[in-house]
Image (cartoon, one colour):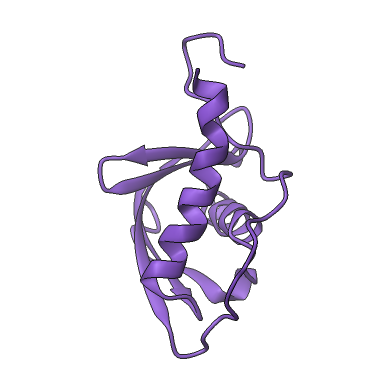
Length: 123
């Protein structure tokens, strides 16, 4: 439930999406992110244009927010955190993140699974 001022976020404590296919070690996907550090809680907020908006409670200091982004994505998308890395924008709220072992289609499916779970909260 929201108070109308903030869009809902999905807690990283929710169960991960079902994986129908094993991760392909040769696959690689990249994703644009808009990161909001210092948020009340960690979570995936939804799409902001072509970028996925991620909120993290960690401050944007000494790489803490980047570490939190990797942790949120790993937990939400049922991936090992070592398979995710920030490839550009390390000191910016606009980042590009690479996913090793996951193709573009599978990445989009997993993200859409999470976003579909947000829909009831938005009504």
